[in-house]
Length: 363
Image (cartoon, rainbow, N blue to C red; front, side):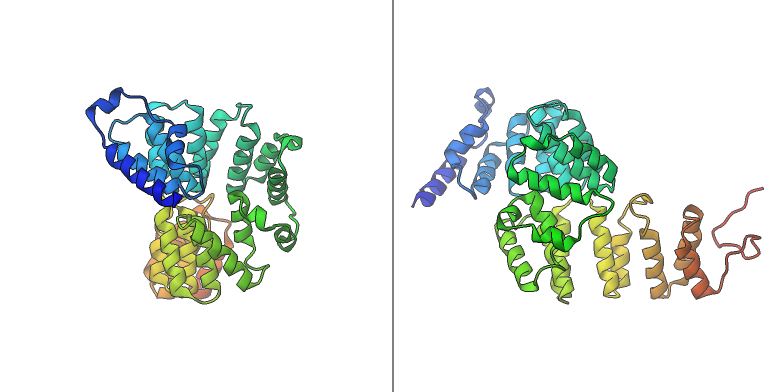
């Protein structure tokens, strides 16, 4: 009965709060006000978002965009949250809360370099010291910079952490070590309470698939997806699980759902490209591999995967062109020479008796 009354009250507020000219002279609703009319119970985020949708219009104060971004973030709608937080930052680019939320959103959209930049702007804030350095460490790990992650973790005052944060600290510390403890041992440390923490939840589901029963993993994951249906990471893990049990059509559908909830995401495009290659669907694999930016630091495997797709499609022209071009940049990567030698009988020729099709020699 309480929920029914609350919903009716929210609808009434939404209808009565249509944008008016004289609204600009009124006080800006703050988070406490919105919480007071929507209640603080779990699951009220969508009602808060609906309320803010009614009162936000072009030219609305930055604080309203920040509030909606916050509720969208908490409901794990990161793509939409990013639009709002960028609007808020245009008006107040130095606001601590805005920058902190922008960094969290960037981290969850897998824009790790942008996230590091945001968090470095505010890392001197003592009140949120541990929280910010956790974010910095996590972003560094995602960029495969274990040394930097370890440095940030060492800045955290471990004795001041809650038991939940101490466990998170232990997990990140292990992931940043050159020699990690076996993943099976790491997964066994998780309990139901730790899986409720979104930070630990993702680490668990990313690594637990091969170390728990399929039945348990499926039930755990579906339970969380039911609670957070807009979380692109959960949908991504579900797609991996479906692929593992040979439910390829359903996996394909969930990969697409996850992709739509991200902005441009090269990591996910690479994962989907590999997924299609395993199904021998090379035309679809090339569609996603071609979306990845030419960044040889983080995506060094992409040219090799694309060349294999062209090879298996029998497209010798594109295959040779790809091989000839890439080996000029990846001279020490023997995979390309081995493929070329295997399928074309062309050995490495230092005298250039056999010339590459795209090689131009200038006098």
